Length: 247
Length: 334
Image 1: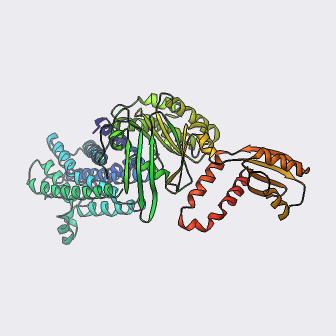
Image 2: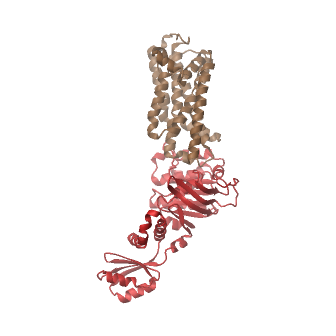
């Protein structure tokens, strides 16, 4: 597969202003809002033992990364409805290569969103964490975003243009709330906390927090997220084969 | 399906379709097409909507799997020819992304190819240099088609497939388009274009393949295809009162195939127009403003596609009237 194509496609997505609003502006506003209200007092979060502002920053960076990855669903749906992928079928790029390019672009946009939110938090709120802590938190979040890139591909494969928006809303609201990316799970009812244990966004956040704390049992989030990755990958492959066979 | 040799060969036909069929449920969209196009040919694919042109193109490119038969490009699997960049196309339902500029679109497609032209060369050859920095969403119909042409040629293809490339273009844009197409094909490239514009097929193609109801109904040079409809057409104004007796008398003229009248203008198709005209003038002093014309591509098109629909079962009861309907249509057009 062409590296030149992957690079150009990722750069194009990074420059897409409209999707940046989704992936970056909303978590940024939430970070500034929460940080401004509660942030600078230097409280320590009881669960993780980290400064509260750091926990919130990781949470919002996770949210931004997740949105960036999920946003690829629109890219795929739009490209399908416009007929751009018909144009791409006239190139050496394969169908699998096309979907891979979307996963790579999702990860590129997600990484940009994660890093930008962390940098802004450090500058605005002087959120204090070692460089290693930030780096591991970003890495944890970035890897945790992989299942969301696959969810985006799956939505892109299935959804007709008119259903993409509602489907996207349901998925991202569910993931954001149940995963504790908007508000800490401790303030939510118990039954929701229980459901949270199976959604990837919960483990995305946990992996990020473990990175920030530079410790913890990372096996559990890694296994759950790997499980999601494999299941989603299997669905995508099945759907792709069915589409190819039907032509 | 037969096994296909997947090694593209330099001497093999650019396109070879063998007893190609494609059914969508009950509908046979492509109903047995055999077609071989040699390198260097410029071929027009003509036919009404629903004739199966776009489906045939999809099958030739390997975008769809035939129900029966085979499609080869350069002697191998279509996909192999696409991967080596030997095929460029402007397809129905294949568009550029509205948020990108023309140059970005060409660059992105070029990046996916192995040995593309430079972006500036593709833009220049498609006469897109001055619109290179414009967003696709801001392009006019004609500019859009030129941008799509630039994308189609960026792989430096040996075979260009253009599905209605001049749709949505005004006369000037069409002329510019064909000029750039000509420049690109002078180097011996193969071009297959589907069109509704019969004059384009006549002017730019070396060979015309006419399709109707999923089949090839005519295949030859523009001259050969036009000759399918024999005879010439005589049009004249008359001052006498039209009556069944006069109509019967006119049918007695040499070689007459059909007669139509509208107001005080009659249209008469005859296999021996010279003799028919002499006799007509000797019998009727009151016939004036006479025009004798050869059949146009439109006439050939209508005659051939109408006779193809005879084979469609629900059109059988119309069959005896087809000759008359045809001539009415011809009369309407000119």
